[in-house]
Each structure stands twice: as C-alpha cells, then as structure tokens.
Image (tube, helix red, strand yellow):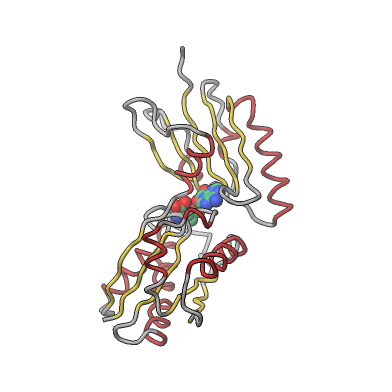
Length: 252
Ligand SMILES: C[S@@+](CC[C@H](N)C(=O)[O-])C[C@H]1O[C@@H](n2cnc3c(N)ncnc32)[C@H](O)[C@@H]1O
C-alpha cells in the first residue's frame, strides 16, 4: 500500500510548522508538488525554506504535478467537479509512476488542508476509483488563525458563531443572522460594496510573510484605504492573498 501524508504547512511563516508536521516531513520518500499560478511564488518560497530547514535527508525526490486551469464560464459547481476529476487523474498518474508500494508520498498544503483546499477531495476521488492508497492529514495553522492572532482578536463574539465564507458568497449580502464573518478568496473586494454603518473590518494580506499588511477599523472609514493599499500591493508583487473578518460593532 502507498501512503500519502497531507501536511498543513501553515499560512506564510515557516515558523508556523508544527512538530507533528516536521516529523511527517521526515517520513516522506517523494514530495509531490502541484504547480499552480497566482500563489506559486509564495508557495514555492515557503516550500523551499521548509524543506531546507526541516527535512533531514540529503537527496530530496520531488515530482511536479501540473495544475490545469479551471473553466471560469458556466456553472461553478460543474466546473469545480470537472477540474477535480482532471486533477485526480494527474495526481493518480504521478503517484503510480513515482511511488513504489510501501513508500510514502508527501503533499504540502498551504495553511490547513481542511479549509478551502481540494487536496483531500482529490485523494478521496482516487480511492473511490480503486487506487490503493492510504492517507494521513497533518493539520496546519490556517490564515484564519493568523488573521486573528495578528489583529489580537477573538473571532467570535461572546457565545456567538462565526461564519467562514468566500467573496462570491458575500456578494449576495452580509448574512442577516451572522455576527462575525471571515471572508477568504475574495478577488473583487466585496467588502467595499457593503453599506451597513455598524460593520467593522479586520483585514490582512500576505499574512506571516515579510510583506504582511494589516488594516482594521469601521468599514465605512477604512474601506477606501484597503482598496487602494490592496491594489498597490497587488501591482507591486504581481499577486495577493488577503482575508478579513467583518463583524457588527457592539451597539454600546
Ligand atoms: C485556497 S484558500 C487556502 C486556505 C488555506 N488552506 C488556509 O488554511 O488558510 C486561499 C485563501 O486563503 C486566504 N489566505 C491564505 N493564506 C493567506 C495569507 N498568508 N494571508 C492572507 N490570506 C491568506 C486568502 O483568502 C486566500 O484567497
């Protein structure tokens, strides 16, 4: 049986790697490295630093997996499903080619594998198709945790829930029954369209990296600043990863 270790490497700073993740890295025979567009440079840098710092063996076996573009027109769910099927084929092919029976493959996942990441779904697809594969998941520090830590806030208000969602979903409006909402994967600055005067925002970009930017305040007061800063940073670096918490201010 082949084994795949899905290792959460934290969202940005190599110091976020857990002791469990370091032990897992040192069990890996072959690292499978998805090659994907926008976040590529940051991910590549973090991965290289992590391997240099924490992997003890001298000869690293690395196998690239080319990530196809996801179709952007038409039905979103259908496109994602089709994309996952294509990815599963590519992963499966590389596992069969490069991982011998009894060997351990490693997949380094940005942040935590349980949050807006398709790796586990792809592995489940491969198993459903009959590939004999065992796998383990090593949790990582997600961008959500880093956002809260950097702003020194709790995500929830006392006894209240927190909603984790995407920019696409927020575009339908701030959920009427939610006190606190964490928004990820927002390429269009959806927060800037919200006009509720009681919202506050805690925004962070490039968290955990030397380029980190943090802005917080009443949404109405800081949203233009965030839009400008975000745009300038995106142009300067050629890519951006940002996340934010929106919450209703305490009326008192
Ligand atoms: C595909 S999701 C992956 C999330 C990841 N699995 C995690 O645990 O954070 C990518 C989104 O996570 C957020 N994100 C991840 N790392 C970040 C970072 N270092 N700074 C700001 N946002 C980040 C952004 O919203 C980005 O669009």
